[in-house]
Structure formats: structure tokens, C-alpha cells
Image (spheres, rainbow, N blue to C red):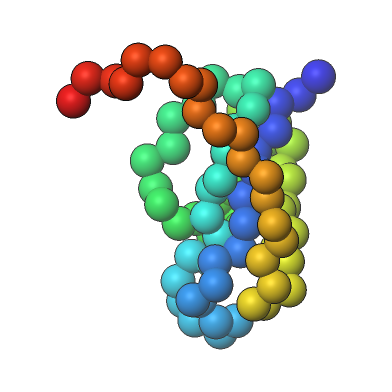
Length: 82
């Protein structure tokens, strides 16, 4: 099974701007180090091809409507040292 590279479109970059439009979010099943914060689609495709991974675009929700996410409480016990 090939690895997966998850990415999303950045919100502050417009359609015609000459800035990278995508942000790498996660990598699964591929040993790879990424040093750039923002990437172009062609760059993502080249990285995926070289690593033998599949690109997965993460879909965003509607603007202003955040879905509720249930988060588990941390385990009780000793408090971590500072």
C-alpha cells in the first residue's frame, strides 16, 4: 500500500497570486522530511511521485461553521514536571 501525503489549500492566497497555495498537513506511510511551509501543486506532485505516495486533498468545511469535535480528557494522575 502506498503512503499518503495530506495537504490543504491555504486561505490567505488568492487565485492569481504568485505564492504557493498549499500547505502540507500530514504524511502517512512514507519516511520523508519536508522543510518548506507552503508548496505549489507541481512541487507536491513531484514529491509524491518520487516517494511513491498518493496525494490526498483535505476538504475544508463551510466558512464560519466549525464542526464540534469531542476531545478526550487527559488521563488523571501525576502532573507533569515543568
